[in-house]
Amino acid sequence: MPFPIAVAEIAKTEAKTGFTFPLGLKARLAKDNGGEIEVAGDCWQLIPFLDTTDRKRLARTCNDVVRETARMRDWRGFPTDAFVVAQNGGGDYLIIRPDAEGLTQLGETIYFWDHETGEHEPVADSLDSV
Image 1 (cartoon, rainbow, N blue to C red):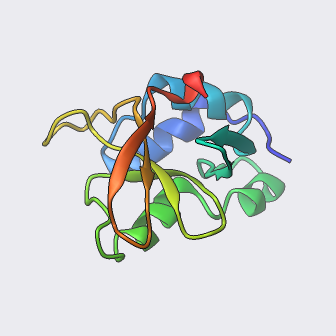
Image 2: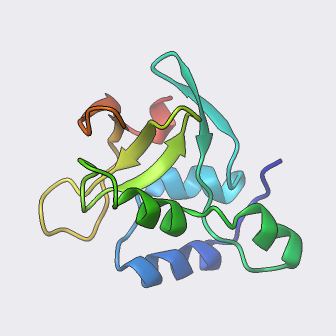
Image 3: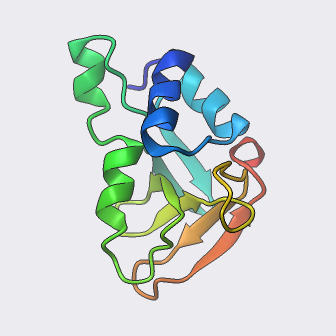
């Protein structure tokens, strides 16, 4: 069961990573930090922001976007500037990336990343559009 998350907790993740997350993602996760979405005919588990406000929230968000992204960066073909947004339980991920190389503002576009091929393709204009 996802909980709301304070904007200050999201800001901690941004400070830690040096990247600014898209407004649509922040708004969605501020309301429900986790949960499920359906994209491209598949059910996806949203990756939460780490929430350190109490023990229960910390335990429920320990698989946060920073930890999951760090783990995925070791995979062949995972873009070095990408962050995970959701997983389908089968090894594939939804990711976000900056709109241009060298930017620290992550774009709204949601990409499907295939763990078998290491390739990614856009599947939604934003989290708001799914």
